[in-house]
Length: 401
Image 1: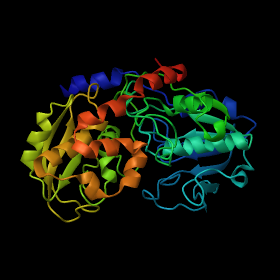
Image 2 (image 1 turned 30 degrees about the horizontal axis):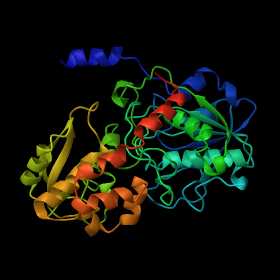
Image 3 (image 1 turned 90 degrees about the vertical axis):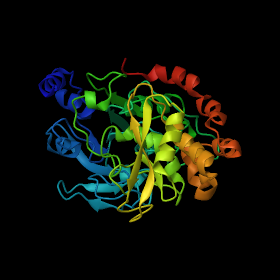
Image 4 (image 1 turned 180 degrees about the vertical axis):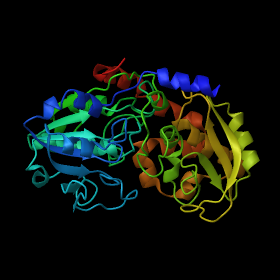
């Protein structure tokens, strides 16, 4: 069995990311230009070499500046931590922070570059801030007459899944920067094209945009099938499948002080747990909903940090068994429904972090509809209302079958 598995992996089509395709073309579109690179530790080739070092060492490329999103260009800052200007130790290049005094490159930051290259691994959910950074980089490029090149990478959720409503007026933020569904089903390159062409950037800004396509990827491929190594995109996304669990629990994770979603334990985004929960009871209730592609196992654990630190928590571990049919966003709302049915609790009210909860959902309507009866069926139509139209629009920007 192990031998056969190894043979399958070896014979699978290997995906080439944008940086590898660009390198094979001898960096043709960057020649003669001063290059600024927006990246982080996920910007690597298939041998784990950093895009920073690849461009810095290439005789054809004049890399003059680096730009770091949340966590910094080399990943040495934690989630939400303020990042200031610094000099990269390895290359001695200036590193301008896009997660400090400003989240959008200023004219001063861009004065020495002609083209901005973006190479960051996304995880396919709107609330993950790297795509917000990408959009702000595109806006700044448009305003300062600079080019943008996106080095494309796989969407770990695949390219066929779209879930959630569009962001509404009053709810735009760094975790809901654009009017797209929570799960958008696009690669960063495709998303950049859509933002640029559909007037979704601020003031309908439009930059001079190029996308270096991947080779060997298609919309039905999950990350494990690419043959590419996974570098954790942030401390709590350690595995490619973490992207699925992020979408299944991260919204409820915004409710402060009421529930653990595995942050602080070895299963980030993969649990729902609290001291007052009966694990078996909750697992039975969650499994009684017969949700497609997922089952729930009783679990008890003691977090090492974050909510519930050093306390024994009881709850369920989410086990996704069929990644093709599972519906991710509703899972966390079924948990809220189960807790209400079992314990009479309203965790949205108890969590009292409605501002961030609404921001990640891009609306207050879902919270308002749900808390009345705390039944998932009340919000499903609202979650799904924009999907068909978004799919129709986004298909225009598909770079892959």
